[in-house]
Amino acid sequence: MNSVSESFKTKPITHLKHIVPLDFKAACNNLPDSHTWNHHDDAQPPADPLTQQETVPVIDIAIPQAMTLIREACEKWGAFQVTNHGIPIELLDQIELQTKRLFALPSEQKLKVLRSPEDFTGYGLPRISNFFSKLMWSEGFTIMGSPIDHARQLWPNDHIDFCNAMGEYQNELRGLTERLLRLMFGSLGLQQQNIGWFNSEIESKSPQAVLQLNSYPVCPEPNQAMGMAPHTDTSLLTLVYQGSVSGLQVFKENVGWLPVEPIPGAFMVTVGDLMHIFCNGRFKPALHRALVNKTSHRISTAYFYGPPKDVEISPPSELIDRDHPVLYRPVTFKEYLDAKGTHFDKALEFIRHMN
Ligand SMILES: C=C1C[C@]23C[C@H]1CC[C@H]2[C@@]12CCC[C@@](C)(C(=O)O1)[C@H]2[C@@H]3C(=O)O
Ligand SMILES: O=C(O)CCC(=O)C(=O)O
Ligand SMILES: [Fe+2]
Image (cartoon, rainbow, N blue to C red; front, side):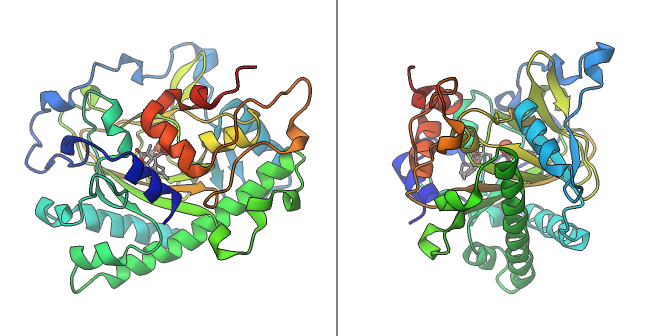
């Protein structure tokens, strides 16, 4: 069993309302009270012209300065957009098409692959739903490894294209994520060969990655709805593809929520909590959220890259000294997912050493 399955079994979701998405087609004319959030007037970027110019850095991964730019972005923002990464646009278009095809299925069909309370793959609301009193205006489909069993149920005679596209996408995303990780480690002066879990060729020691497809249907009252509530990702690193419809925002300390404008073919890269733990606080996890809109159905994909099973994440000696004592106790992916499942945004505090 993988770490994510183990964690979901330890902490099953107790209310079905936190798993079953709304039938959005049936509810398109008014926003139910269950989905009405307090007005987020903070949705607009601040008026101050100085801070207005601030935006998540855009980095061409193929230029010589990429390593330095990535380090600066991860220290200051915990996020950046990456371009010129080599994942073909045709594949991205195909992923967008297959994702839309999935969410366009009738509700009854999607419910055939509904997540069970103690599992994480399949159709449903994001796991973080149970930490908020209001429900999100979104639906998701979560994949680890091959989606073939679910795809067969969704399209009994026609699941091959979906599976092929998702398989190829996961391979490409793994390659790009590992390339980004090598740059990030290099930028911190770390010798990659010394990071055992990142080098192992043994299958049982391979990284554990989750691919999440998100759908945000058009919404009658977007200013009072929330697509994906504010959170940091549990992963080491996440790659988000948001197509061409805006909605993704990153929170910047002392500034507020800033939009991450879609750039054709670009990925938004976010530092996850486990990376923050691994680099002893040097890179910080990005707090982000997704808003919805009145006119365009928005889809996104998020690829969460986590460490191999049973590996304890703790900082390498190069990042520890008298001025930089170890901030967090060592944790496995499963232990940290459990902590997230109980403490949510306080999970880092929960594992922090009391120096
Ligand atoms: C590997 C992961 C990453 C998880 C938990 C587990 C499986 C499902 C992932 C997501 C996907 C949707 C957003 C998120 C915030 C959520 O609610 O479920 C993610 C979460 C996390 O980053 O914590
Ligand atoms: O839809 C988006 O742009 C963000 C999705 C996200 O943050 C996630 O799936 O973790
Ligand atoms: Fe996220």
